[in-house]
Image (cartoon, rainbow, N blue to C red; front, side, top):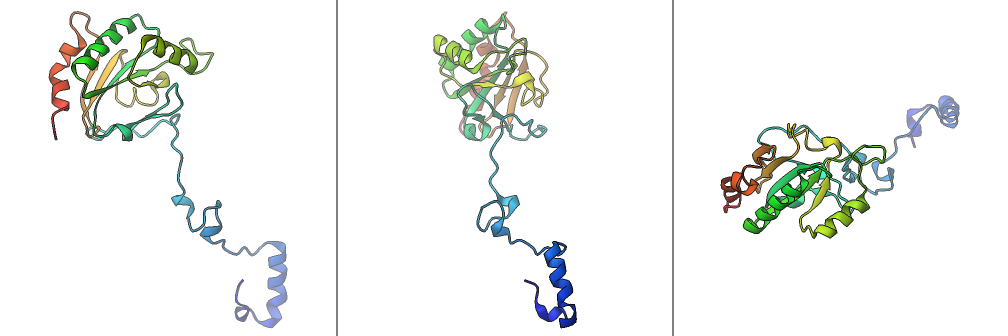
Length: 208
């Protein structure tokens, strides 16, 4: 309430009229906003949204991502900190998928300290030509007994493009601090992926 001593008695009827008409608005305390006592709007917790294209990736910065998964719980880069991570980008239904999975299994057997993540760039809408549902993905994963995470990067808009990749399949090896150790585009069928990346895989798991 505005102090009455600031308004002479002869003008009090004017203030009353303005308040009644809504032309004078008194400030609302921050603790009355959004139902969060004592919390300013800019401090309110924000729910992470995997469908939002995230900030541009700068060279030398930890890779930030939040990718949707068939199980509903996003694959969060923050939860992978402290681990060496190999991100494998491919389209489900690619003729190279079978070969890629064999090579990923070899890496999983020979380099158990490296966390593998299969990232599928398929569309998520039924009208998309390469659409596959979450239910079908989970069924496919269970049939193959895949033990590593499967995430989605629809059309590559969430991560693939930010990493300046242009070829499917592509592979990104992350150090324990989340920075990029090496990027490799394409799959060389004349040798194994494990052999191609052996030195890098051994390097990223070394103690800090």
